[in-house]
Image (tube, rainbow, N blue to C red; front, side, top):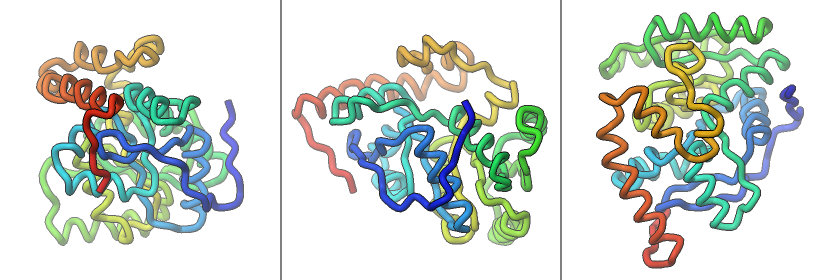
Length: 265
């Protein structure tokens, strides 16, 4: 399907629900793409969170992180559990807006509209494969910037240099692949400094670089993508899923049954 983007900036905010106190917007792939392209053409500095159960639980455990997500310019429902929650919260037609899908849709639209994009995160090898694959898929896509930061906090001088390089490259949409919650914290800290629309897409870098397989469509629709990823990367992910998933199920049921209220600050 070809991605078409309206020429006028999207001014209205989408309706939203709150899952365990964390905001999730009732948006769609088309709507999220339209917003990102409109903001980028207007030269605005904004950030978009792509939310799943992991992000909800990180926000539940850390109020400061919850504020970062809740003040984002857009929060899309990536994981199917969040889609199901939004449907129960009054948005019966809600669809999934996943990071890998949103990345491709925006890259397609950006290639048609001549909007330069950039990539921040991943390893040098992943970035090289990612850029090669996207250029093959979208030959007219303008990739103005790609950087693999070191696995340590940048010094203030290094950070200033990164910001200057991103801005001077002309990048208007910056995909950030640092993993949750690091990428959301990074985007929030750089809003107003990085003159681009920043979109935290997590593992999308690895998927589109061909370094990690994506779950079959039926597993994604059934909300079993976490199981596929656990089987793919058990040593890295088992603690996360063991800690977060059971608590999410219990707390989400409590919210839906009205047994507990969660603040949205």
